Length: 194
Image 1 (spheres, rainbow, N blue to C red):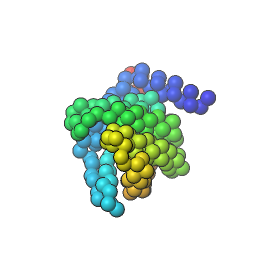
Image 2 (tube, rainbow, N blue to C red):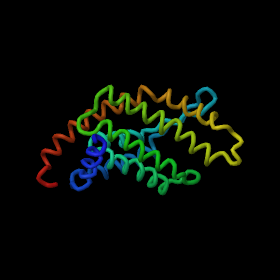
Image 3 (tube, rainbow, N blue to C red):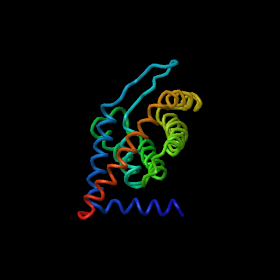
Image 4 (tube, helix red, strand yellow):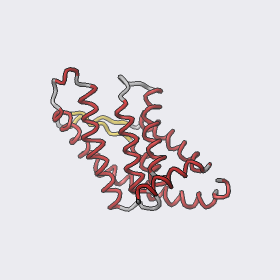
């Protein structure tokens, strides 16, 4: 029942003018961070990509819930590809972006940004979406003839997740807590305009 109620309440956020404006700004920030806030680090014979594009998705989840956060995740991937295509379009990463938004939205919506919730939601997202699912998309789309085993793709994802663990959790907690307070204040101030 919790998931249905949270899903419906977050879908209602899309009716508010304030929410739409903030979601649009988070979407734009997701695209910009996805294009420009990237770093690749060579580690243990693999290349680890560190990106800031997860943060606007998590913030959208904390402020507006799973539906807007899923839209920021999915549309951010599509718009980023349309602006600067790097290789072929992989629809799986659009699905992954939406799933990331759903996970953070269900866990952090309505002042639920606490250290345990951030850690649990981050772990669920990293294990399911960023590790197993991302490895699957790479395995399917970048492995013609399936010569390379899935476990090779999976091992590179585990290394990537281990490197990003602490910084991402701290960023989600800090920024999520700050924006949740800001959202409460602005939502009350602009409540008459919704």
